[in-house]
Image (cartoon, rainbow, N blue to C red; front, side, top):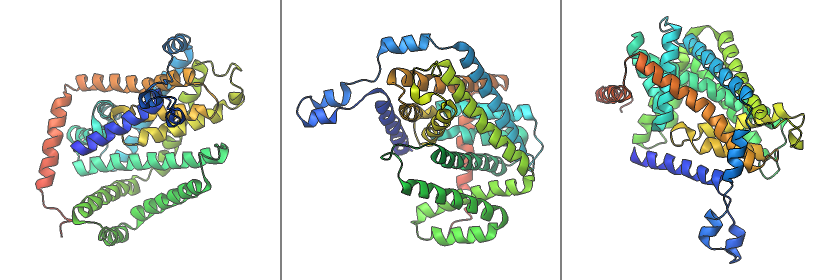
Length: 371
């Protein structure tokens, strides 16, 4: 646990470093600068420019982006309700509250513990099994991952990245990954026994302690797909997922307008704001998916700045753009989470303790993968 925490913290610090500082390795190698100057002597942030840019934000577009983010949360709760429906008919408001408590916890706690807290609260408040509750969260994340992979493929098809950034092998690998995920989904939905036998065969190549964890993860994944199979709302799930990504795209597009990036000062953005929004959304979503500190601090910001650099947006704009785009969701999710935590008369510390006890009880139960 401590090793994983250290690793995710270091990943975030590394991306934060890339976000804030610009290295001068050539100067160091040539003897023109010390190692400290080479790695920490050139900051991307000019505080006067930063505050000037933040002060010039068009709050009308930023407010519209915040409202659209709230709409995306409503859509996401609707999609979760569709996944929970085969297990038990559960009120929309309860699911919306639990979902935001989980996302608030993700902003504050490591290892995306908010997802486990979400499943724990759903089981406790809705009176369904923890396994089924966790399965709905798993399949929701599978849908998110599939959507992201398709978004990456769309971005690669529409935007020409610099040759040294994206190579043909990466594109081919992503296409293969999408196909494999689709096959895994279809196999898990319609051929569970065959898929589990294949998993047992493949897991045999791993050490015993890894094998059990792998099989448990696959089993949870298949439990989620079982819920997806019995849901029967495939079209609604598709519509909600597409609508969700369009909301995120709109939020990014509105943020471009909030920062006046449509005013003609940036030639590479003229007539390309929709495409630029797609590139920023894709890379920032990848940054969000990278294991990191709570709230994807660092990974999200560096990924967003990298995306803007492809359109020649300078750091004095890209840095506050990334900060505000991140804060838009971070603040809203945190406020909603704390509000529902208070309204449901819960304390995050108590919820975490309940979750630890539940996990300990689960460890003490007989392991069906023990051999």
